[in-house]
Image (cartoon, rainbow, N blue to C red; front, side):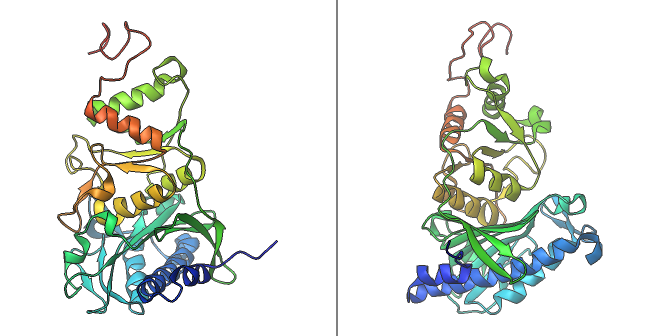
Length: 346
């Protein structure tokens, strides 16, 4: 049995003397170092202080937590040693200059799921690496479609710390060996099963969804007796990185649609530093990601903190959901009496 390859060696092989790839590799390694430090902090839980305490500032819809600020600071410090011109972060209103003139830009969600920190539920960090534009210190570098990404990854701080990464040649999962501080390749070339019997959504928002999402969930809940002809399980952690990691391992679909609530009409996840890196990771593993109408990676961002509906995972499920967005009453039911257009449904 050969020893597993570590992240640095994996990236060195990928770069193979290519200067542009080498810059990306250095940046990913610096991000992994920041994530390792964040993981050590998360491991301490309440021993590290009140990580779940609110700072008094809003981080999007949610109150900013102390762990959000600490993680952001660790990332900034680490990227000062990387060829990164500017940083876009959920914790910063504007882009932050790091090394002006450098060729790359990085966007991050320092802590995804920070509301779960006190409950000891898995949280994580999401990042994307993009080519820097112009002088590289304003937000223009982040107003590129997801197709422009050079690397994307996320970590999960759970029972063990994992780093999920793509540089455009498949999706790979590395596990942190805490004793050495190295991320070791644990699951190469992840392949998401094309079909699934599992979905992740916050079902408490059912009354706020549009017809396409309600129809999809109704179909799943009707199980074997419904139009899907099979039974489904529902999972939801409120930490997208945890739900996405699960579907990478065993298939599934993750849904965070737009809905009628205030602040949610354009969706919940941020396009640039949440949806885009997650979508590329999923696509590179054979899955698909959509906002319901179009592929996530083809959307042109208009602002750093732009929101989007996000539905991703097993390809056949995503395709079925897209069809429902175009015609929520198009798929036939087995029973015309209780079908979507039946006598007992309006």
